Image 1 (cartoon, rainbow, N blue to C red):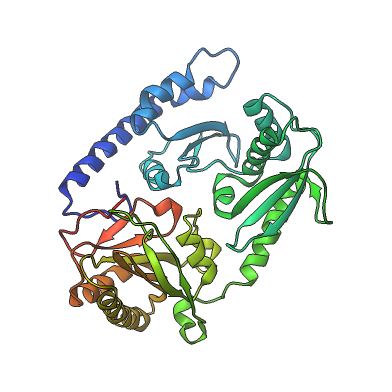
Image 2 (image 1 turned 90 degrees about the horizontal axis):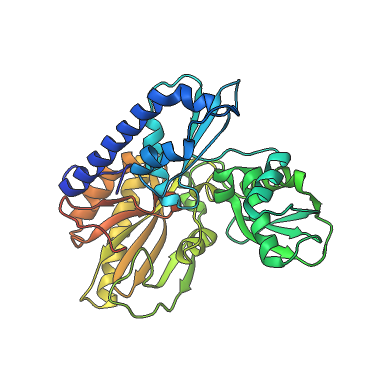
Length: 386
């Protein structure tokens, strides 16, 4: 279900969204009515059953959402986090729930668990694994997809598998859910301290964001649409298996990219976040248009023509630029870096329709939290394969 880019002509989806919005309204009504009891339940002498209340009301909106109460980040109030946890595609739903909240005295509301202190992080590890973390040092590095990899040296860990679970819990707690999902890559437990970049666990957050600063130093200070002449392109080839249908970009055979790291992350299905490739708020998305039944040469000619008109129109408006192209077994692709998605849509619609691309053509998004969002090129374009 789409929350950011819904289609007013999709009556079935709109009806489903209205039903969810009704459940969200009922949830906030119940929460507001019981807010005082919920706050009082944090004291030892209360018998108010918070888990039962949340099951009865919040889980009626969507059972996949997580939730957590805790002290407010500012002042003496409480906080409520309604989070998609690792199901990042549910982030637009969590945002929609938070956006529809009435004013509720005594509560701060968030869509992701915030960063915690080292003491709280250690307590979270013990609570979730029933074992203390023990001695721990951390080493950080930037990988080829602009993520921060974490190595943990944990001499007191009983085994590497448990240590890896504890390391992930500790890192997510120290960084906060949103930063953890955006910036962290591989988490590894190692047998020895190799190299000199080792710090105590309480220094993890500072070192991760030092690496983020290093990543930012490699990114342009202005949008890519203002740096068209400076883009350097490279070619690539892939060998996808033969299938009846291909979600996202899974049929790619060959193409070109002005941002190798971004393209590799998107093509390999890694956890994608546009912020890792732009420090100025660009959104990385892609046009996907059907070419089934035509030979590759004809589809490449079509893609080149569409690329030229879409690129020129976006650049002229200062709204974006093509940063990648691709030809698949069934579909053609254009990767875009957009400074304003909503403002770009009329231009994209106009140029794609003028090129008479197939009805099964879409604007889709690389970001993990936008995986369920899409925009059809025509009013009757069906949903993309998933």
